[in-house]
Length: 386
Image 1 (cartoon, helix red, strand yellow):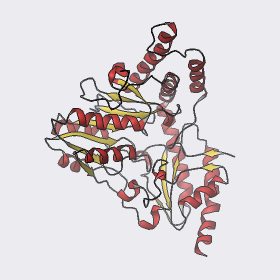
Image 2 (cartoon, one colour; image 1 turned 90 degrees about the vertical axis):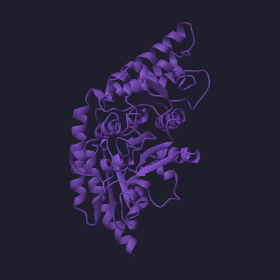
Image 3 (cartoon, helix red, strand yellow; image 1 turned 180 degrees about the horizontal axis):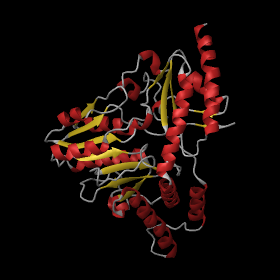
Image 4 (tube, one colour; image 1 turned 180 degrees about the vertical axis):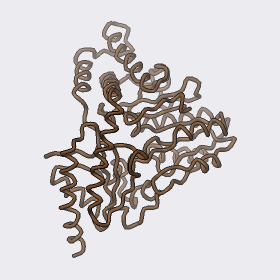
């Protein structure tokens, strides 16, 4: 059987998403900036997508800006806010477990003369609010913090952080990378005092190559891509209408049964945990229960290289990840930044597997995976010791 447990890397499109994208590509294919009927037809899909997505966040449609995905959204939020608010200050804060789209962008702005504070985390990847409070200064213009960690499923204290930031320095902007959190939990940007929020469609069963950035109406931000002035001048370039329409359909579908799907994923993840616990010398890097995201489980299998186990599972039709798909583009680094930040022992850095579920994951797939691990892990350990 085929068992896909790498949904944090990407997800398969639903039939509804594929259907609406085909409809737009083959029928409503006009340029949404054109004034004729075909353009108006395409623009309607873009407008309706903006309205659909805004409802999931309880914000205004005009605060949704379409991008090419999470990476561009993170870049636009960080660089755009840094450039627009440089007179107020040049200090930014982030965490040590962010996605490379945030960490590498922070390193870039440091090269442009900005100062960045990287907050440490506990053994499960969570930021301490006391350290965040101590780091905020009068010249702090931006705090960027992920909602859900893509490798270990840690849930950051977003709502409490928003309250704290605005209490300590009301002028400090709060950006949240919600690429792994959107569609898994309810995020209300106004209530949580979030100024900017990044999302990618292909993590919620939408198409690759599209996403959006929520930008609060009063947030000062500059564009980083210039051209024809689309997206109210913040993100130029002809809108990818089929993908935008597909993303809106995916958002509508995933929020339809959000709570029930999350509960079911928690139950399946617990079943996977219970099965893996029967193996010797394993370490769970993900907090059990509801203290972490429902869809992610990170496990270190001592004595087995993650790449070897990954391919052994693949031979049985089980697809998992050795950490983040994006981080795997940099094999020269010794393990992931997240695993190093949580203090994982050096010998376990390259022995860690990430299992990530979706609403489509079945109990049969989990049972099959547990059986495969019970067979493969002891065998690979014996092979390694030879």
